[in-house]
Length: 128
Image (cartoon, rainbow, N blue to C red):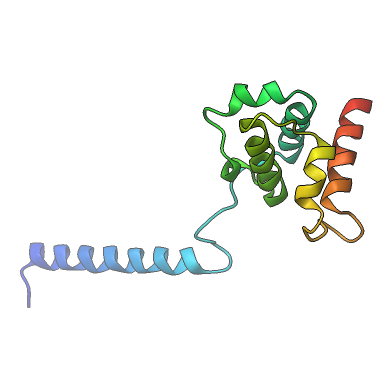
């Protein structure tokens, strides 16, 4: 039998371990995912890509801190990276010049290819 103080410490330590185990189990439980989705704003991503495709100089405003992996949508990551590479070597980056880089990319959704998406992106942004 442990002295009263030692028993209290032992119980507290055991309870602490139970709480840690419960937390660990909850983090992998479907109801409490360990990793939450990062905050994202698809419209903001689209607006930034539109701005860069309309004025390639806009890339200079964000290129010192923004990287492709910062985009939530994978297609936006690819577009930003490809546009950045073209601009870096002094080439024009717009929906027409990007078309050849994305012609073999699988459609984003049924019936919508990446070149069509780029065209819609610019057309929708200029009409609003």
